[in-house]
Structures are given as C-alpha cells and as structure tokens.
Length: 153
Figure 1 (tube, rainbow, N blue to C red):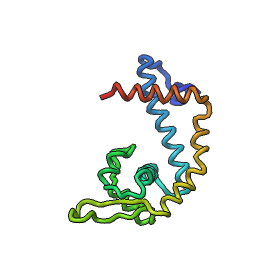
Figure 2: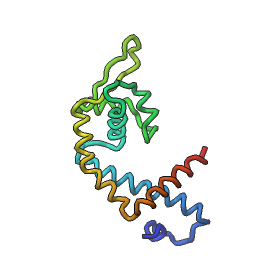
Figure 3: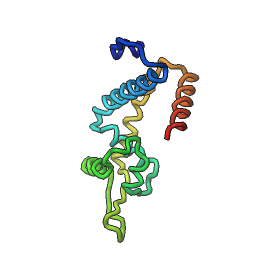
C-alpha cells in the first residue's frame, strides 16, 4: 500500500525527499513492531536480543558493558539495566573486572546461546517480512540505506 494511504495523507508531500524521510521513519517503525512481536514469545526485547547477539559474537570472551553499548543498534538504551535483566534470566553472567570495581565483564551463558539458536530457527519469518522484494532488490535496498547513512553527519 502506498505511504499516503497508510498514513491517511491528505495533502501531497513537499517533495520526494520529504516523502522518503517519512517513508523511512514509517517503515522503520513497521519493521521494529514486527521484530518486537516476533520476540515476545521468547520474553526478550529487541535491545536484549541485540545484546545477546553481540555477546555471542565475542563468545567465549567476556566484554564490558561499555563495549556492548558502543555496538548496540539503539545506543540510547541503558545497557547496564538490560544486562541486569538478562542476568536475572540466567542468559548472561556479569562479573566485576579485577581491580576496577566499576567495570563489569559480561559473557553469554549456554542458556543464552541455546535461546539464540531457538530464535534463529524461526528467522525465516523475519526474512519473509521483506519477501515482496526479490534478492536483487534487497541488495539494492541495503546499498541505498548504507549510502544514505554515509552522507549523514
């Protein structure tokens, strides 16, 4: 469906750049809502899922909360609080790093790794969300989004 119909646009957009900006925001929220709903049965938020994936990428090495925060998709998230929620779920282990008691090292647990594996068995559902695009169009979309971010400050 066209963006104008989706958002009940009455007046035309100022120009195609304006429409593209609104379209990116609307489409981004559309994808976020789908991923949020997808993760609900696993009792994970998108930010928690992102942290688990970051930790798996460094496994078995422990990493700091600062390292996690710097690599998160949503950098406004409170990484310390999110790590604590994951610790309570026994998906990560958090320890004080040696002499610096303020620095916390975090590592994913076997339970956390198993949960990611279970989630990824269903990843085709996420892929199907973009199934109206063929493989070449997805490559082009990725190229255009990367290009767009390269010109923004």
